[in-house]
Length: 61
Image (spheres, rainbow, N blue to C red):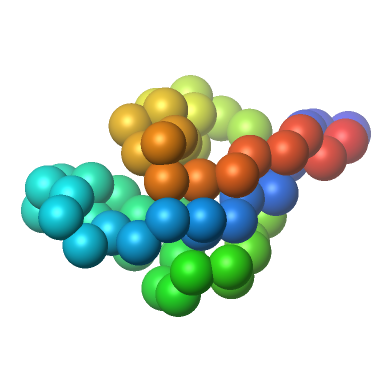
């Protein structure tokens, strides 16, 4: 069974760079306190690392 990440947007993207806003949107987050589950792979890990200061990330097994 592969791992997944439960990701919640905790801070606004106002004032962030355009590429960080695009990354948050690509993850699937639109509004504050909304959550999604993303697969654990190198591409998603890179996205999460880029905007980790805006997110709350938990590992789901």
